[in-house]
Image (cartoon, rainbow, N blue to C red; front, side, top):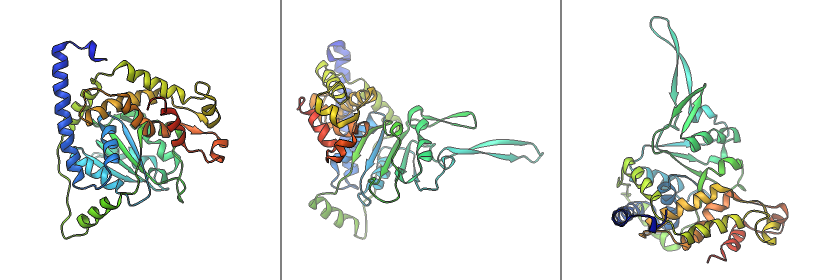
Length: 334
């Protein structure tokens, strides 16, 4: 939907609603900033993920406040949040729930479904790559369909439902790569890096004293769902649509240039285009703008494409990184 397709009166109300949401998001940013220090880009990308109605994968070494960020978001956004610590012995039933056989006082027996921790609004999958692929895959249906099937019965999950998973880098001991099908379910891959010196100084002073700041609620779950619907109504110009198509299609072997063909084993599918469109709308609202621009596509290319592409063996052997490939893809747009 472009701005020219909207009647004037409706466009005026839409603009007012977007501006009001942008102001509310600044309050949310401020509330998160009282607890999380020096991770502005990480916080923004996580908020973009939730505003777009998607799931996020936070990757970084231990001790960078990934777990704390997810817990803070649950409180600030008024979501019912639960946490699962993924370990090698975790089973799918530990996530989804299971049926147990019960016997009544009259001797009648029946099965009762006991819900697992996935039945919440914000699920934190902590160190998701420490569980076996079988258990990781148990989240697939929940992430895609917002429902789970146990013993032939389908159980709907609460609304909204989001998974924010944390992951340690794969080179660390005791980790398993996530299946490609599950990686594609994550809207953004958010790289969490070390804070700068000033942010770390502020964190030291704020977290080692007698009192420590706690998160406060700013939004409710219903308001978040209303915000997600509003984000989907944000108009997108033709130039932004063409930029998305050009970027995604250039990353596919056989459709890009010879360098891409030589370095990329498989490229992003249509879900990457959908993710870019939704995330660009959410980023525009977060930044206080009424519509996304090509700059939003450039900024989001890394988080959206990193986990939806794979390098060839030869490219990995030559030391080529995915960020370098994505950097070449966005050069025509920058």
